[in-house]
Image 1 (cartoon, one colour):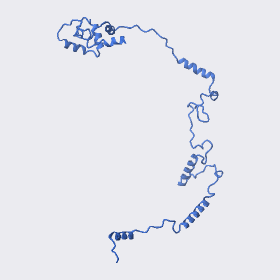
Image 2 (cartoon, rainbow, N blue to C red):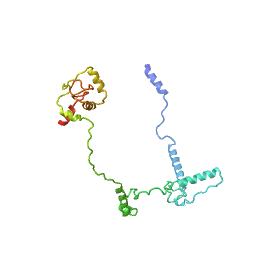
Image 3 (cartoon, rainbow, N blue to C red):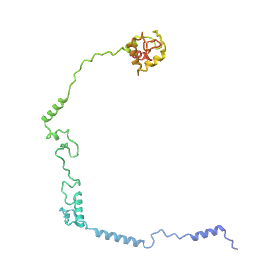
Length: 247
């Protein structure tokens, strides 16, 4: 009795029937003939190019001349001649232009270039190389000219110091009391207002202290710069100067 095929088997057979046949991966028919034909073409190409290029000695050194008739052929010929003449080793070149760089006509006013050796290194420090360009007399003249430009400045005495006002450093060292200690009596009204207005005129407390001492301070304070009577105007503090002396 024949068993019925399952659904999976039927579907597998159907899919395998639809797939295209995979060709053989071998060389196949005609591959050997292709190799033979390729070898023949390579041999024919080598034979056709053999001896086509002229030897270097066969190239003429005479520049090509183009007809001066204004035609397209004349223009093309002239262009080819110019390009060939500027190419290294081209026609019409001599030993000085074979580098492919156009010659430069330097101005006679330009300074002479430094002496270089075969490696392109300056030989200015080589006595033998520059002996023909410089002389002992010329070097002596240059040294003398350089010495003539020097100027020796003799030391001079320091100028005397001109005191522009009271010395606040000396004042700070002479006093011993701290800021805020009342030493002098201050009388008057609106002390705070006068203090603010007077101190606003100075950008630094040192300037205010100098002006305060110049106006009769610390005993007198007509401008109201020292309302607490400690002898220090506008928040000036003598402590930094005292610490500097002590080290």
